[in-house]
Amino acid sequence: MPADYDPRHLAHRRAPLDLLSPLREAAPIVHNPTIGGWMLLRFDDVQEALRDPRLSNARIQSYAAHLRQRGEDPGPIADSLAHWMVFNDPPRQMELRLMVAKTFGVRSMARLKASIEEIVQRLIDRLEPAGKADLIADFAVPLPTLVIARLLGIPEVDAPLLKRWSDEIALFVATSLEVADRRQRAEQAVLAMRAYLHDQAASRAIDTDGTLIGTILRAELDGHPVTASEAADIALSIVFAGHETTTHLLGNGVRQLLSHPDAWQRLVAQELSPEDAVEECLRFEGPVNAVARVVREPHERFGALLRPGERVFLMLGAANRDPRRFDDPDIFNPDRRDHRHLAFGFGTHFCLGALLARLEATTALAALATRLPNLRLLADEPDWLDSLVLRGMRSLPVTF
Ligand code: HEM
Image (cartoon, rainbow, N blue to C red; front, side, top):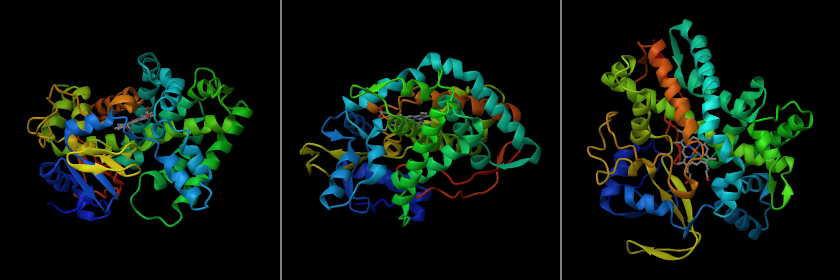
């Protein structure tokens, strides 16, 4: 059996598929004591598990119950995450999702398109004169931050605050590293964001008309109007979901395209569409490596007994490289016509922001290719995140 996958190891972080692909080929289900759960890695199995009601997303509720059993107060972070649709099962998840779904639909995206274009051009204007940049810090981080601020309806100058809170929460939700005070930092971020949105709404500094925060504040939950703290938690879940994911789609995507100069040149020459490029970037090295579930009902899978409370990791990155599903899966080929990958998940939790993420990424790639056609990578080996959930880099130095 191949070695245990552990994202805290530098080698595993650099090339996770060097471990995950042999694991996927060795057995349909693998128990990994290091990450504390089962792993499913084959495309069909992951897809099927994503719509299996015996596997639950209500992980925070069981975490909070576990803390209560030990006599501990779950605190504001568990309280906040319990309002996130991604940590709930239907029907609660659907109730939360329907509240905001229209904001992420085709019509809203058509309205947002010009704003995204304007933000992308402005970011390129800012970095262009230097002739070099960190594509993550100077472009891939501010883009989704500014877009989400626009979507929510908060002043642009406050956008970096959203990003800071989102990062603090990510320490708790997405990282593998043991940061000593990560729970406290995430809790403070939740409290700070609640207070911020509360003040903004109260002082009417937020333009609530036609904005996401306005939509949430006008909705009902459990038969009462949504409270300011519930609204903040729901908004927070979207801020969080839309930030790092988009950043790392842009970072990983640009890195792949520049590592395949032929693909980049075709993008520059407009022989390759940004849409096709983005889909292959999502499949080949999407930003979400894994999603987690908790076993709700005992059941057997490929001879293994899965017990209630056990964790199951659905390895999206490995599934998107399954040779049973894609021809030559380890070849980066933006000419593929089959875009049915699992980078945005599948089933009831399918990414609510998929249209937005695609719009941001295609707009960004088209603009980069037009305005910085000589874009080149500077460093050989990037500094990869240590996350089990996210695949991405801390920085991406480039010249142009
Ligand atoms: C490339 C960028 C993105 C990727 C790869 C991505 C991926 C995913 C995946 C895999 C899930 C499913 C999680 C699960 O099954 O447990 C998900 C859910 C979700 N995503 Fe995204 N996402 C991206 C961008 C965004 C953006 C821009 C937003 C919004 C601003 C967003 C909002 C959400 C929300 C709210 C959910 C939860 C949906 C639910 O539980 O019903 N995502 N995303």
